Length: 387
Image 1 (tube, rainbow, N blue to C red):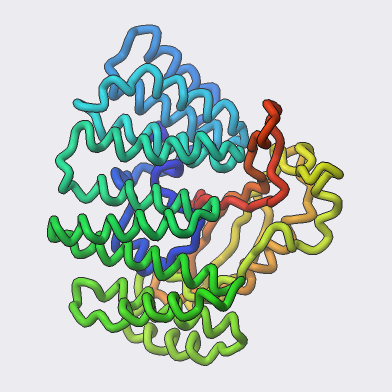
Image 2: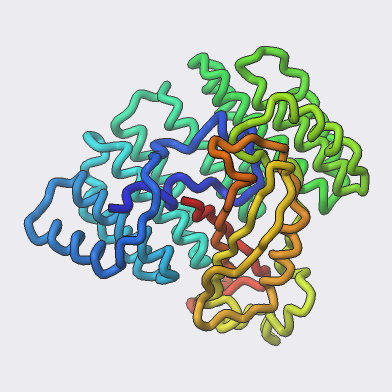
């Protein structure tokens, strides 16, 4: 059965260097990976579980399995409906099953953002924190990790000051409880946010450089991944300004201590509203046409060679109603990625990766109206499907 796989192990699409991802995994991350179990089978297992009034934990596991299976199949609405129903049944068990109940809410937030359900996405990230607090001590790092996810959600919708305030509060709490790894991770989120903003507005460059320099100067081996991540981000910033020498030097420095999995060093920016050939995405009332962002997803597979270069990009699956204007730029961006050289655990010459991309836009209700409509700003959400 698919239990706590893709929808829980995937990280926010706000870019994070993989060096840091490996150091601070999401709360309650599990190693069980998606299988080829038919959607009808996970639906039947959930139905049978509910019919026999199975214990809450079994209900949660079966709900997550079916929701994830539906999501992978492209049926986002069924995935979300399944998760919301299980949350209604099981949220009362937050005090005794805080991690399991929070898993439901975390998975729901990730499905919601792919559907453009902004309000649900934001509230679910906050609910994860409240649920964990109901059954875990305040000093538990999983609560602070969940707070970081709340900061990520605010960053995603453009509330920069709120996001930074949340990250800094996490740093303060983490230092209070001697959780240095968590504090460094939150500091990296601030640096990453400023670095991302600096690509669009140079006013953020000084703040980004200051935060990155502080991390890059860390000498304690316990924080080596964070200092390495900061160096990666500094190199990526230089590359985006046309200077690839820092990236090349970083690649050379990593060859001697190659990881067993690829570490992302550089990824070209991808801004949906600036995609070439996108066509008339916005109506005369400054609202995105629903047909242009409804059920728009594609699974892209690609090969990462041991030299860190990407090749063999192919579309593995796509939604039946796919409008392909946004897919080619995604593939072009993938070709431009640069990973650190790595040594696979097996004798293979690289690693296959599969990513789901969803073209969407947030729903909102304009002031003075009760009718929901899509925001004019389109976005691309990504989640890792690699098994």
